[in-house]
Image (cartoon, rainbow over all chains, first blue to last red; front, side):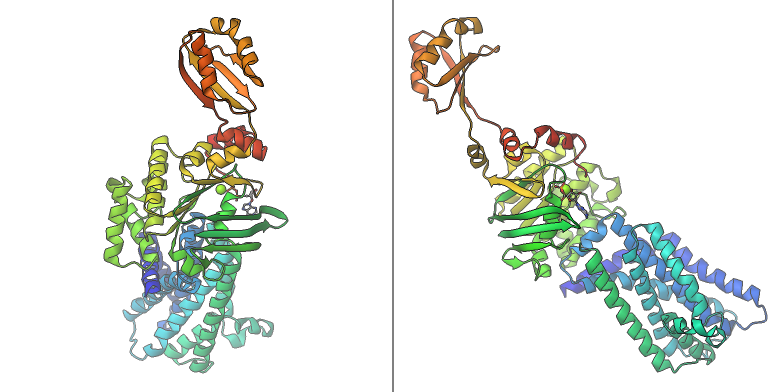
Length: 243
Length: 324
Ligand SMILES: Nc1ncnc2c1ncn2[C@@H]1O[C@H](COP(=O)(O)OP(=O)(O)O)[C@@H](O)[C@H]1O
Ligand SMILES: [Mg+2]
């Protein structure tokens, strides 16, 4: 019970102090919107529906990875992160609370292109029961990647640089722009190591029916990724931040 | 209440804390006095579980800090050397948030936050953002935040370093008040006067080692020193100097007598000097004595003698505001 009061208040504080700040809110809206517009301009004939999975994944990825890395690095440089480390709660609860805010922000980002698309096309055929958990898992794994970055970064600008270093290759390798079958063979194993690959495939399946892998397998793998990333991050925090 | 045994911390090859042991009794103020870089913060960080000891044991309230840090933290209050509150939140929000970290409920959080703001004279600043606070106010709010869950043991890392005189005074009063309420306090400082005024027991720490520890009188006793008594009489320096000095030295074997420019007369002896015979000596010669006082070595003298560190090193720290 006591831990949950702490969890809830860490989450509330982060949402209020970081995610609901005007620059982040507008970033969260403008960024997915401009991606959407860019894609529409680039391929005017292309159906919005086939673009949607990519837009959702991208919005989530960009909304989460750097956010968590930057907020944590920021709190560490101002030493307020120490206060969280000193609270009488387990490291897992603390880390989960920090991630929860980012995941919510990622989900918010994901629905910007969806709402935008809803003005142009009929979304009734979309299987929301798959989209929603898929978005959640993409947000979760991306946030955890952001956490891994935060553990390696000492400064806010480092956190930003590292997250771009991860994000851009991921975008090209996860089957968003280039289908996996068209990637050079030596790159494909890397693709299969990226959680985003499975997330994108799930979204493709739910929105256009064009998935490559069985959805259950993708969900399972995403959960595995999330668990592994969580354990690695927690281990790294324990090792690096408690000196 | 707190027990530290053979605690050691190495950063690579460098030993910051070298095999120190001490105990803090319930309700006492125990102070670490040492210059910058002595290992004070490193020790506190290990005690609060923010850093891992290379070797050694720590228990707080009977709880092993290594094994059960969560339980130990529930009874600890921690004031770091630099404030770690949230700049973007106001004073009241900061306190409420800290309370939430300890699992306190909303009503309880807000009541306690208000109480502490009031007690620390920050009531008017409760709605101001923390980043607008002066240094003294920041430190006070940081201490308030550490008290939000009514801890049994309070850790204060250089509580008055780098802040204004008035805030320092208020903080020292606050610390004495907490002691009266039965809180056990561990504080570090490089101000000799602070250690002397606040602490029931003091440990001198230098280069990661405890050089000496005890109550202030015990520490004073531990250094061999001459006994010195200063007399103020109704005579001036010339009158005293002429024949009295030789007579006194002859009358009280083993003592050395000198007259100072402020017209006082000082007797120094290896053994303690009984006052009555000296007073009678003055009385017989029709000299009135208005004051007779033993001059003790200051804690500063003792510190210098025991640690070999010049007191100017501590003073220099003071001017720099004590930052690493
Ligand atoms: N993280 C660290 N890595 C390496 N050396 C450190 C670290 N923290 C402190 N030190 C060194 O350990 C010594 C003791 O530091 P510290 O405990 O902060 O002293 P104090 O608080 O008494 O001023 C100093 O020489 C300092 O430079
Ligand atoms: Mg220090």
